[in-house]
Structure formats: C-alpha cells, structure tokens
Image 1: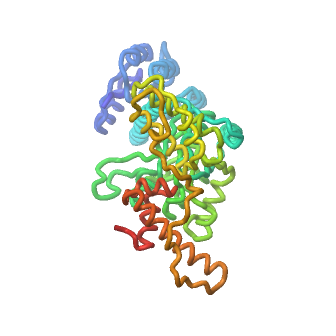
Image 2 (image 1 turned 135 degrees about the vertical axis):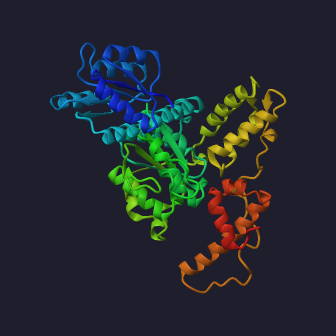
Image 3 (image 1 turned 135 degrees about the horizontal axis):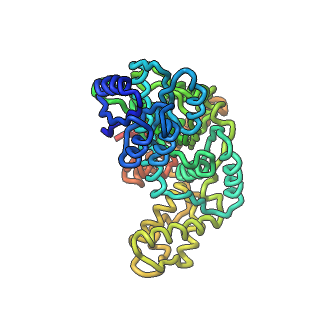
Length: 462
C-alpha cells in the first residue's frame, strides 16, 4: 500500500498522529513544513495527504494545490484551528476532501483517513473504467439517416443536458446501450465513468451484490469489501439494461437510490450518498408487467419521465445499407481484408430481409461475411442469410389442435390460442437453432432467462 503524507509543523502533534495511523495499519511519511511536503508530493505518489492549514512559509493551501497538480485523485485532508474553519471550508471548493479541527480527535482522524482512502480507490477504478470504454468505444457513432433515427438523436441531445432518468425502449439488438453511451457522452458527466449492468445476464441471487456491493463479512466467503456498480458510477452514469428482469426487492432499493441518492451495501448499515445519472432500458412491456405485478408501479413512473423508443432495423429503410457498409469497413480493418465491397445481389438481400435480431444480427452477419470472404466482392450467398423473409413465412402446421376449444369470451379464446401459438413457435425456433438457447433467444427477441422460463411453462425444456 502507498504511504500517506503527514504535514504538521508541531513535532509532538505530528508524532502522536503518526503513531495512531501506524497502529491503524497505514504506512506514514512526514514533513515538518509545507515546502518539504511540496517536494515530497512532486517526487512520489501517496495514498493521501494530511496537512496543517496554517504553517510558516508554504501553507496547507499550497500543499493542496501542488498535490492536486501532481495527481488529482489523491485526497487531501486539512487540519485547522477553530478560527480557520471558514478558510478550510473554502479550501474544499478547491478540492480538499475534508477538514479536521484541532485539538485532533484521533478516532475521527482515522475515520476520515479510511473514507478518503476508499474514495481514492474508487476514483482510480473509475479512471480505469473510463480508459477501457474510451479504447473500446470512443465517442459513440450513431449510424443512420432515417427520420426515426434523426428524431431519436434529437431527443437524446435534449435529455443529455439534464439529469433526468431516461428509459430506452426497443427490441433486442436495436443498440440501446450505444444510445445510452451517447447520452452520457453528451452530458455534463462525460468526463466521469459510464458503468453498464445487464440485469438479465446475472443470476437473481447475485444482482443485489453486483449493483450495491457488499461489506466484509456480509456472508460466508465475503472476506473483503466489494464495491458495486453504484459505487463505480459515482459522479457518472449507470446504465441498467433489461431493467424488467430486476427482482421486486431490488426494484425497491433502486427506487430509493433514485429518490434519495443513497444506498447500503449488502451486509452494511451505513447509508452511502451517491451522485449519478441512471439510464435504463428494456425490450419488455413494462406497463403490462406493472399490471401483472411483476414491476413496481412507483418505480415505473419514476423511470418513465422521458421514454425514448429505438426503432427496429426493419423500419429504418436504407439505414440497413449504411450500417452494413459501416460494419464492412470495421471488420475489414479488424481482419486485414481491405477493399471488400457488397455485390448488388447482396445489397438487395440485406434490404429485403426483416432483421428480427436488428442491428446486432446485421453486425454478426457482416462479421461472418468478412471472415469467410475469399475475393473482393461479397455476394448474397456469402451472407448466409435465410432466403425467406419472416413476413412471407407461414405459421407452422399444428399450432392449434384440431379440437381447439372455441367457446368463451374473446379474451379467453385468444389467451388459449396465444398459449398454443407460443408453444409451437418456441418448439419450431428451438429446432431451427438446434436447441441452442442463446441463438433462439436472440431470434425471438427475448433474453435467455425469459426463454428458459417459457420453455419450462410450455413443457419443452430439455
């Protein structure tokens, strides 16, 4: 662990604080005045800096400025006499973490040092996250000229300037995370972390731990504290994809974060203040889930202030070709196959297909085509796409039994028919995908977790 720097011109007080901090497990370096401290922070990296505010020569404010110039993530804790409290409070606007009044309460000192060290750890993790996203994504480029996408882009630009929770609606594969990232990059929080969590990809019992983190000893095996996505997204944006998959108990905790800007880690009792912008997305009908009591109505009203619907690819006209060429260029560079182009029959095939998997399916199609390309021109057969448009396909035989019960109200009959149709569609899709649940879920536009539940209900689970 990096040492902390203790700056105090009174040797007795400096020795007393050093002894207390070393007993608490910290390595301590010390300086007797501001000038010596400035030389030290320029020469090496510290966990944090504790400095007296009033010292002869260079002051604690000078130490604060030099420390932040050397490394903005290093917390600085100020020691101040009663008459200098206003000056210490003003220094916090310049980046000081906190201040401690003299005479020094050693227990309070250790508590502030612990909090400051935790903050620095989070800041450094956030920097790593931002670097990772910058390399992976850069500024999100939304490809498309269709009017529907232009309208979405206009909505995003308007909402990005606010801190309002945004609800992104759209089928699976439409690129909701890309639009969430665009909102973040256009917002005042753009220099802070963007953290994403797919609620459908995490087992129900682990969602709370991933989202809120846990304290040491929270459960068997919790040997250390774990920071969750809430902590990591502090001062930035948290994107919750497939929010409709959140358990009701976790929905209640999320509602508290939205309303009070605070939460507790699993196994913790202390409320943690958090400053973040939450963006959520779903391919579900949340209003229907509210009616079925699968989603909290108060949370729905809280997140749906500004809903933005991402159009499916089949409704975006020639954007299909713009996106196809975008992915063609991307994968041509990635796989070092320059000069590839789409033949006329390939372009026709792309335009007339209905894309049930949306942009994600198109991206996968183009990646496969580039990998398998032998010459410069990519022809339609090299795309390996279905030759029949989904709209032209007929429902498989046997979806309704010969002795189907037609008696009852419209709602009763259509409900029974829907159950038969859903079972037949599930069975046919699973056969087409050779019982690969991931592929089948993508084709049906649902999550693997939802597919598994539907297969169980229909009695089709292998």
